[in-house]
Image: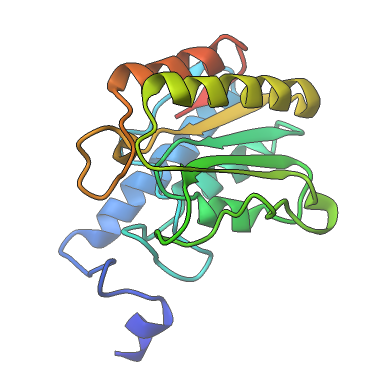
Amino acid sequence: NKQMQRFNVGEDCPVFDGLYEFCQLSAGGSVAAAVKLNKQASEICINWGGGLHHAKKSEASGFCYVNDIVLGILELLKYHQRVLYIDIDVHHGDGVEEAFYTTDRVMTVSFHKYGEYFPGTGDLRDIGAGKGKYYAVNIPLRDGMDDEAYESIFVPIISKVMETFQPSAVVLQCGADSLTGDRLGCFNLTVKGHGKCVEFVKKYNLPFMM
């Protein structure tokens, strides 16, 4: 029907029993995590059902219905002047980038496969706009990235971002589709490779949401 078309529901974002509850849990998990970090009740919070980075303000996209990450970051911004978002999913974090494309309070850094690949965004030259110019960082990568190659890119880039942006909170999206063997992904990372990214970010001892 028209409502489904309007919000891009169907095809890769089908309606299913319990969809509303799923969205509540996913979005609520990230908001609750941000509240805990804001109250200094936790140093690290993990939302196992979160990371739905493709959803837009008024449309579902790429298996994502509600962008829990954006909602979590908005909550963090109530207490933190600058929040860093890092995305290591094999797909570009387009929904989060779009939400904060014109602000200098959130820097988005996305490592992803580029080219003829969903969602087809995340060019090296996409750097933000208005106040947010230079606050969107895109690192398009080739197929077959392994742990060693990924770390050699991730560490220097995130080091420089931390040094220049100086965030007071960090959100890391660890999309498992960048791991080897994923049927939609094209990278060859292992769980250890993901773990090294987490470990590196954790060293900065900032409020940390995953």
